[in-house]
Amino acid sequence: MKVILFGATGMVGQGVLRECLLDPRVERVLSVGRSTTGRTDAKLQELALKNLFDYSSVEHQLAGHDACFFCLGITSAGMSEEDYRRITHDLTLAAATVLARLNPGMTFIYVSGQGTDSTEQGRAMWARVKGATENALLKLPFKAAYMFRPGIIRPLHGVRSKTALYQAFYTVLGPLLGLVAWAFPDSLTTTEQVGKAMLHAARDGAPKTYLENPDINRL
Image (cartoon, rainbow, N blue to C red; front, side, top):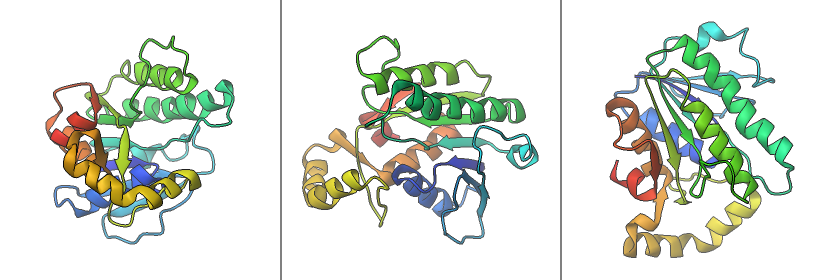
């Protein structure tokens, strides 16, 4: 399987990249982002682009892939709805539209979030925008598309969040999250489980279009 990964430097993307590189059934991973990961692996190819809205000059590198794991995202804190929508919705669709045209047999997996609003009418701005993004992705002609809606994600294997506040949360409460995972396993997931679940969904499909922590953990 040949995989395209967006957002490999973020917390979720780091975990997904690790699982892709460890899986013997993954032949190649193309990481796409504004910066490179700094990792070296025979399977890994990196494509650093200044403009993630325009892929016209690199389309030949994006063709011939079986799956895309779209883990690129930002926090909505302090952002206007217009600015958040441009990065969350418009940027995602710019990439996905090109990929759907170049790879009609592709499975596209998008990392959304627990509480995403598919009606696009709710009070939470981020949830409306994420819902609009999911709805637009599901209209594209991919072989299959799955929306991952994780809640709390526990980082494992040295994975760190790029958001300072989130990383502080994980540093302080990391041991507690381990206890919570033991007592209530479906109350959270891990970066390892998210990565493995994506690979499973890409290879063998998933029973639902929208997958939250319990569904991700079962996969």
